[in-house]
Image 1 (cartoon, rainbow, N blue to C red):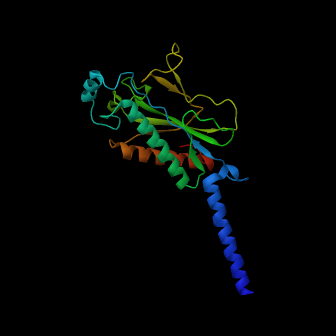
Image 2 (cartoon, rainbow, N blue to C red):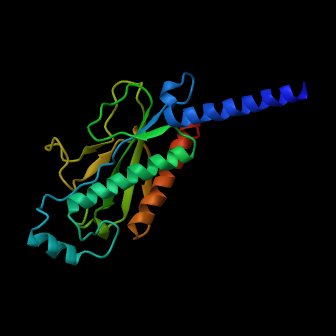
Image 3 (cartoon, rainbow, N blue to C red):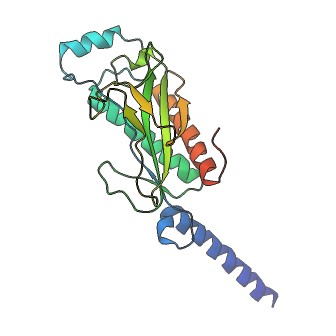
Length: 220
């Protein structure tokens, strides 16, 4: 009888471990589990200048060393930063016990679950927020990132920000923008000049904020 009871207990433990693994890997397919969190690529601008032009080299030499200065093609560098942020954030959320996955650009928006989206920002001389630009002056200002956390089951998702210049239908690179206070869940200052450390720290802070929001903790 004791042996049978021990076997039953072991089976229960094994089943609980298997269930936990199923939640971590594919929570969307398990009824009654927490919703999946989809991480979108954050917006980051690249100036409209050809990578091989002499102008790029001239501008780059004038910039201080910083997280958004790069010797590589600005387009490729921006892609690296965005991908690194999305991958690191997704990994941090999974580590925190959240069923998270990165949604590829252009992918179909799921009808349920949660979406994490954001935009890289810099502050201009007039203390106005503008979309950060890779390698073209963003390193001269304080870098920030604004993040939104959306319930995809609710229709009519509002934009994260709007262009201050109403004459433009889409913000130009480095354009001045106004954040939507009803959408932005949190805003973080990206400290440090080391790019990898900056992304790691920012992703961890964003992950913590997402977990807090899922647990009903008010935004700070």
